[in-house]
Amino acid sequence: MNGYAEFAVDVDALHDAVARACVALEPLGAFADGDAVRYLFAGPAGVTALRCGRDDPQRTYRAAAGSVPLFDWHEREMRDAGGVAIADLPNPRASFADADGAPPALTVEGKGVSVIVVGPVHAGIIEPGRFTFSTGGETVIHLDVQLSYSRRGVERFLAGRDAVGAAPAVARICAACSAARSWAYARALEELAGVTCDERAEWARVVIAELERIYNHLFDLASVAAGAGYGYGQTHGLALKERVHQVCAAATGHRLLFDAIVPGGVRTGVVRDPRIVAAALGSLRADTAAYLDALFANRSVLSRFTGTGHLSVETARAFGATGPARRACGAAIDMRRLQPYGAYCDAAPAASCEAAGDVAARCRVKAAELADSFDLVERALRELGDAAPPPPAPLRSRSGAITTVVEGARGAESVSLSCDRRGRLTAIHVTSASYRNWPVVVRAMEGNIVPDFPLVNKSFNLCYACADR
Amino acid sequence: MRRPLTFTHSLGIRHLVCGSCNGCEHEMNALTSPQYDITAEGWDVVASPRHADVVTVTGPMTDAMRDAARATLDAAAQPCIVVAIGDCATGDGPWAGAPQAGAGAGVELGAAISVSGCPPDPRAIRAGLAEAARRLREPSGGA
Image (cartoon, rainbow over all chains, first blue to last red; front, top):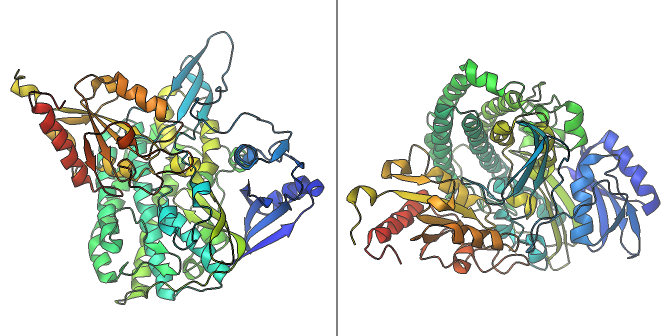
């Protein structure tokens, strides 16, 4: 089990300490609770936090976003939701839309520039957000993404709740990364309590987390096919995704895996007979491989993917890209491998990489990861044999603060929380892979044509609910 | 007044997300997969509320979405039936009463039909839509 370490940093030294840590470690973002401001980093030893106490309410912090752009959203949220005074923000706009609407969009002005505003309600079955395109002809000069329409205030709502009892609510912050978030949350409570999970429960968690990755990656590929006008790729992909949901239901009793991973292990009854899961999988792996072969063998479709939505390795790093978005730019960063947890300590997958940074590269990374995920599910089912995991271990609450991170389908999913002695949440902060990746969708759209927005956007296929909370 | 039989079965569905976790959207999307294929019923997810016979709503309602949600319903042609999809929309979800959430999108927007579940199974959503189609076939047009 890897750990969490906190280092107290004086306010005057914080800015430089953050910049130095960004060189040595993988930055995860920053957040503020009532007690402190914390900048988070992942590395082989687990999560490291640089902590600066908020004992002086008049204190002003110097923004890190000026030199490390990935902190832009995090620091503005610290200001707007956490009441932290921050100087030198390069982009001081308000973070959130509210009952009076969204803050003004950032647009380009000049001769020949047209501005197209879309949202918050979209034409389809899509979460709400406002997208403002500044265009010259069909080419996008700048895309402004304004989210937070799904902001419910879940973090403030959960403060004060019993931490174990809040797990079902945490599972429902966002559906598509529910299992990953439940795992990060469970690990946080287990590490605070000093509890190690049963080995079979850890293998069952791998089954659950990899099924989540499989249905998400298939959905992404189907959606990208739709964005490229390839109906067969969309329809076939959606059919495979539906079959994964039926496997999820057979494995956990829930088509979207809600509440399968719980603090202390897995919910009783989850993967109770690994042979049933293996039977439900059936020919899904072979059929997925055939689907991917057909997708990548279509030269016309591939040409629509190639060069579209390009992201450079420098931009991906500077703006905090994570998961397949980052690995498609050549960086072999995967939390399952960088800081292995649970059964990944024995079974960390190779971090599948591509160099090109375009839609095609992101699709190829996901195709390779689908094969890895099926490997992991099969390995985990073999390890489980014919025995059900035991009931979740009881957790005796212990006070403290912690951040844990897991690798979800879209990248690093972290949960930061603190508990009091009675096991109640005093604060919780969720930073999702989608939140980390939205700023690079903007960069990937620059210089592309407006009609390719669905294609570029779906090659990331980010959530809104976990970004907004 | 009877409408021509040929036009009584189609359903234009406009989907409105009001702070959902996206779980209900995954199950709504499943309806367009080959396994459930609602186009076989003459149903379609439409790109404008002007084309909608049904507006499906999800989520607890958020402060930031309230005006846009109301504007969407106001833009819909009549008759139009609001269907609440999922426990958040019916006021039974985990975020009812959260600081920036409302009582349920279906509760606030006057849903005539409710489909419970977290999220509801695609078959349950299909049944809710079938009920909307049935009411629209009535002479009163679902009013």
